[in-house]
Length: 471
Ligand SMILES: Cc1cc2nc3c(=O)[nH]c(=O)nc-3n(C[C@H](O)[C@H](O)[C@H](O)COP(=O)(O)OP(=O)(O)OC[C@H]3O[C@@H](n4cnc5c(N)ncnc54)[C@H](O)[C@@H]3O)c2cc1C
Figure 1 (tube, rainbow, N blue to C red):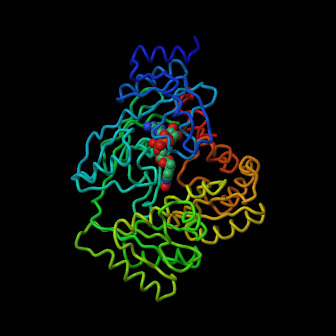
Figure 2 (cartoon, helix red, strand yellow):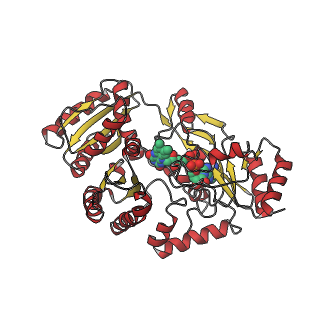
Figure 3 (cartoon, rainbow, N blue to C red):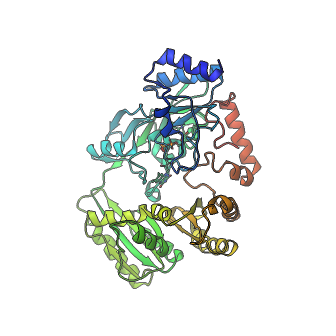
């Protein structure tokens, strides 16, 4: 018997058939990445229901030298949860670990197991008059373990930060089978290296996250969602600074080019332009208050009127009700979907220093369009975080193999431009297996050396998600 076969047999004997799934039909939906681009294979899915069961699995994997690929909702954008195609690794799904172990408005903390779906945590916090403020388009499928392991961002980072800022502690099974228990939720703790922070964004390469202590904030009492038309990304950033100087209520500020708006209107049913006239760029603004007596809509309306008077914006409208607010967000959330329907698109999740983003966006788009005639390059998303989804769309006459033929060269160019601008080739989606070669090509040698040294020190047998993140 090969080590993998023996490992699965031992796991089956120790943990039983509920934990060890070998039926190919049950495995098949989980071995391809969310975008459907990377196909892997796994001889089994291990689905533990407790930290102790994860410990048993990790110890057996270490004994047999079998790599584990942790997986939550499989919504990651870098194929980090996709096993290698040769079937040499085994999927470890955390989806049965879905208890919220504790949740307290007094402590402003929830302790959620790795498999808890983000939307479920939102609902649990809401029931207590509280809120877990991180949110993103995949909230109905992604898990706390996956969000932690990718250091996910989303649309409210401007005010609340990424997972790094919202995680108060992590429980994880380390590659040697020891459990790191950091769930105490201590505000201050200076006992040396911060293992919790090391595990956040580690993409499963340093251990299996089994539970996470998460910071809560008071629930939203009211929100104002507005749409504004602006001349340029630079004007959009001016508007954000204008608002920030006058209110602390803004927590979402998303940039949308006219071209993306038109694609959504063309391909997504039940969408309509929020403003009557035509504008080169748009911003979606969300402001919230936890104070029920605060008229947030009136405050934002007053500020947008002042911005209009100063010539910062061409026009603006505030959603009259929740349905209209959701309709505004639908435009933002379906840009990628509309692009997919329209044709082939190459996505880059990049960041540069915030103040440099407007110029970067305009210059990089012009340079890519010059170098690859016919393509359309543009960006949308989290302008206030200096994070844009820089997408390059194929020319309308492009051959069906455009992505395979030109994709790598375009991505190289975008990544070079981002690096020259002092930015990051992965702002929030992680490295996974899709960006590993580019990380190795572009990261300073000191960074690569440190990544490899940390990986080797904690996982000398290389059983934690090999082939991901660390070049
Ligand atoms: C429609 C849509 C919108 C999105 N919007 C955003 C966005 O705005 N911002 C953003 O940051 N991301 C976004 N994403 C990406 C994605 O939702 C996040 O990367 C999410 O954090 C992944 O969670 P998951 O549970 O699906 O993890 P998976 O995809 O299953 O795994 C992701 C990585 O984490 C590892 N992992 C998973 N669970 C564990 C664990 N318990 N222990 C150790 N390692 C683990 C995996 O091995 C893999 O490397 C979006 C995705 C979709 C589909």
